[in-house]
Image (cartoon, one colour):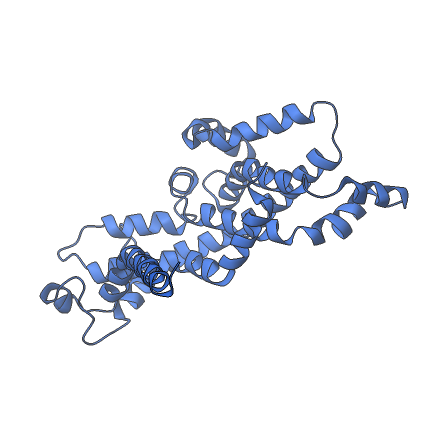
Amino acid sequence: MRPQALTLHRLVLIGSLLLFAAFFLTPLYVMVSTSLKSMDEVRNSTLLALPMSPSFEAWSKAWRSACTGTDCGGLRPFFMNSVLMVVPAVLISTVLGALNGYVLTKWRFRGSELMFAMLLFGVFMPMQVVLLPMSQVLGWLGIASSVWGLILVHVLAGIPSTTLFFRNYYIGLPDELIKAATLDGASFWQIFWRIVVPLSTPIIVVTLIWQFTAIWNDFLYGVVFSGADSKPITVGLNNLANTSSSVKEYNVDMAAAMIAALPTLFIYIVAGKYFVRGLTAGAVKG
């Protein structure tokens, strides 16, 4: 291929990528720019216009004093509920998935393939199917309408996915490592913590990001299983956007949406490259 043709090909490719990037980033730009405008500027300017006098007043109101139904305490309590729910749910479901994957690949037993098939079925099962039985279980345990109940629901819902990730990754680990460690007298837990876990960094990162995103952005379980004092950020954002008032404050709604999205955006910006590495290392192969 001639140098001129090669240069033209690269220019077309780069231009196409920039066009697609601009297309997908336009909604984010609209949200950020609108959240930095006053309502007068929102009404008098175009959707894509830059804010003339940027201000975080809408962000402050969305965080502290925006009305979500009859309560006008902003998104702060909902945000904290999500943090209290997400952190333990992600960590517990990741650890359980790692243990399941470890057992189902390196310590197989009679019926292990059937057990994995049943767990795999949970990945594709509609969430609506478990609403009623899960409500009964939470009631029996005495943790209905609480953050602890939401943690349990998300842990149980996440185990099939985390097990699938770790199982498919651990298939690629040499069985000789486990056999050699067993011959040296290492126990089940010693092999897991000292050999398997240190080799699992890529898939651990993938699973943490996957679970964090899924749990943080969940609305169905949050609205069904939460109580008045345990609603997550997605429910708070929905209540804020649907609260009627004399004037619809689009800048506050956009700021609230950005507040709800910031944790997942931060996770992908900071750890996105590790997520891609984990996928290419065999996280979804099998």
